[in-house]
Image (cartoon, rainbow, N blue to C red; front, side, top):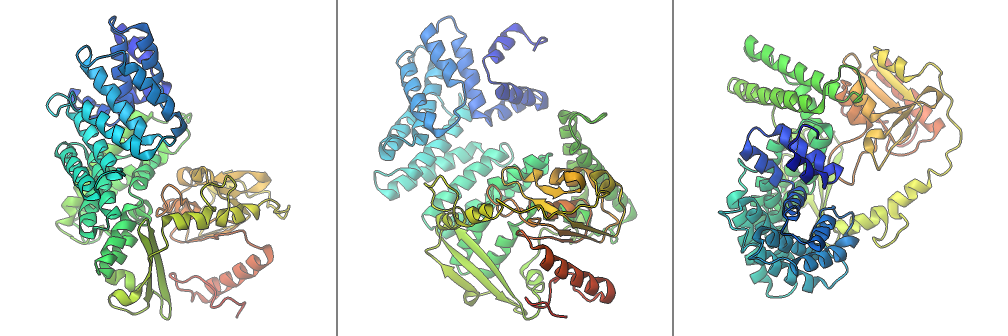
Length: 584
């Protein structure tokens, strides 16, 4: 910060390292003052901290108030800190008046209201009523004309508080919540503030979902999904794209449930499928895009841009200390520009070929993929209940007869089934049994000493077969991987960043747990080893969902390769044994 003005240096010195990093990122990426203000408004904690720092730097602020503001500037680490923050806000408000420092007073009112909403220790009904009162007081200063960003944020927060309110008539609270969401959307438009627009539409959809107002649910969720598509086109990092899809991870399932409740079963099934593996399907669609029907000039443009994005993504995944690797700001600009140009080129190409890069399959295309004599079973679980699509092969449409309703099975029940009762500190349910099975696996692994990561990266083969130990990291899926020779791990991050499998026909992961994917933050995405190998260029991957026995795995894989390599009669859509038994 040596080159900054002394006043700005002093202002930033009181922020946390994370807040300073965010500030500089906004400063570097903003094109003008309006863009800077818009981006800063998307980080309310940082904005509030800056405002309090500015206010506390004034000589008119007494020392004891400056001490309180400095503590409030530190982000809360858990909800257990909310009572302390409530106490600090009230002490601060006793030392500052609306007349003396209106902006600081409003900031403290909003901070107090947000802390009350999040406080788990006091009666919820009292907290919500007090929060509403403090939000309304903040709006006495945060007018739409003077502070449009603060005004719309406070309107959104008021809507949430009214939606959760316990006291009063439910119909009146619902009316107030919808009115405040609509006011927020007057400023939070898709074009100006796409992320805030998405958040508010998602919140509005959740509100209607809780009231089982299915048509209104669909209207709000459609808007949130449209915003997600725009935001995904702007995000350049893998982590950022996963974060964006996690934001709408429940929206697709809830929209599908609402459609099914309205009797639109076919649309519901398509919507449910659209919400699954969005990032992987985009990557594969881009890789397999058929350009043959386009003019040669458009073909060349799209191939060039596609290759440019692949090379940028490959470089981006390299370790930060790799020689000649560009910095994050350069990647952000280069990838944003390349993706924007690609979207423009695709839009132009679609005028010649409307079917280019279709956005998902329609119902007929999905139904035709169900193997003969098979049944597709697709569950959906929401906060209002669950349902299961039971779809046999060779049907042409879906109706109520293909739905099995589970009205009493909700998200909380699924959580209990997977992890055990919520209050229990010990992990139970399926995950508890899963982790218990891993306590003693034995020293069964015999390793080929030549199967190293370095050899793997050099290998150019039609088939890659991994007969080794696999592991899945629930806390950090990108660090899941395979154990190669000499106990060397080869992680999903390395698969994505270091492998090129354009000559490979099949990757077989004959190792434990290689098919497990992340289910907590993005349950409908496909973040795991199979997706990593697919994105690295492999057209097909075999993997496992659980720890496997050596002997039975050997027999299965041996028979698979016999049938696949010698007879070549296994359908790509059904690479499984003909029955549960060991049949010839």
